[in-house]
Length: 576
Image (cartoon, rainbow, N blue to C red; front, side):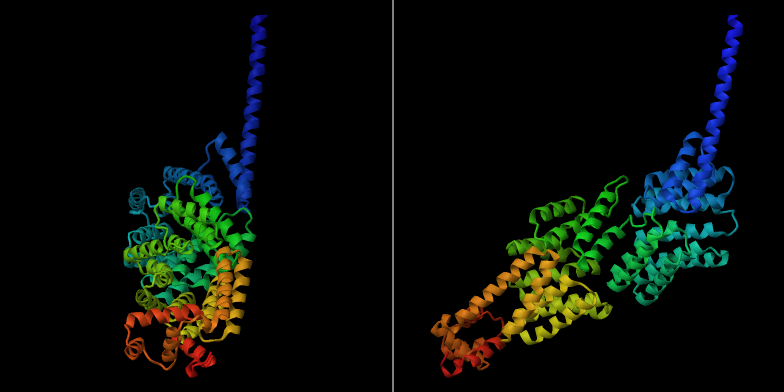
């Protein structure tokens, strides 16, 4: 009885186990089928969940591992994607499909290069090259060349990178692989821009982005291509092109709800664009999103830029404590927090500290783009520190760079800097022309904060020329823009400037001493400080101090404005 009963139990257990196994197999097969279906319709979240479930029960084959890796990559699951690509590579090797194994290797190599893991990337490149040695020419050879070219870019050998990208593009043409053609042409375009052939390079990038937004390429490459194009636009100071492609890709993303194309450096670049266009809340959100993403393992070098962008937004809003903390994090993560920190010190009234920091930063800058980032702040801080000649030299360097590049953004920045210097030199009339150019360019570029800053200096130039009404209107418009953006510090400075101007206007010449009135008369006749000193029998240094006092009391900044004031108040006739 026991034996018979035991056998019955065993048979019942065996039947139950087989039923469970059959059910599990059906569940796995169902999950796999569903995952493939979800992948085909680009529902990345569902595809990843179903394929992952199937993989946990029974290891996926090479083709399904590619689907799993691609879905993970589209969702920004970089660690999971890398692991799946490596497994797919191994499975293709087992099938002796070296071409597809090499393409999986490409997907492993590129993120390593962007993370700066040069030794590991080099190992994979060598492995892939050996795999393809005896393989007839196919697209995989071109993808390998793209990886080699990217390594050359990281090693600052742009000439070699350009030649390798061109070679990869030729393979793409011969094999008819659209993905390879796009990646190669994009790389060629970036290399041409670095080599100074901006127009040719930009044209290639535009060609690639047309293919991207038209849906002609795999979604796998969309995010990386866009991110790189945005970086290229920054190198060219081409704000319009960056914005146009951002809008186009945003429309593309709206049709891809599960896609996460913005997950690299482009997150920071998008924050910069939003900031420039006056959408500061959106810029903050994007920068915070970038910081959060870059802090996940594996660490991303662009975390430094995310910290810096956050610091800049806090500085502009007048939130000193949070700006200080973000600049500290920028420094800790390995990036010099200049020019932002120096500008913060200037706003705090620590002019000497600001000047020391910006001088040190610009002396260390060797890359032209880095110098261009520092130059506008250097001019502003040097003028505040009384180093007008130094400010003039740097403003001229910036203007020369703008003339060579021709980019509207760079031209606007240079025109503003030259206007600042001319004002400091007392040439309000020429300053006004340069500042109006800057204002017009910033308006065209839809950069409200920069345009408002130009208006503040336009107001100063108008006041120096005696046009008080225009000065008041320009300052009021600037203040309104600052208030709408939330630029608390700029609002306070605009209010202080207006109050100061009104107070000085009320004081008028009645506050001038007899000696200052005498000096003002001679200034109005066109005499230099040296000539006035000789005429009055006192030192030129004393005359310079008198002129400075006159400018301060009258709220002007040029000899031309002093002359206009003297004529208006009939000081030349000895009457006020």
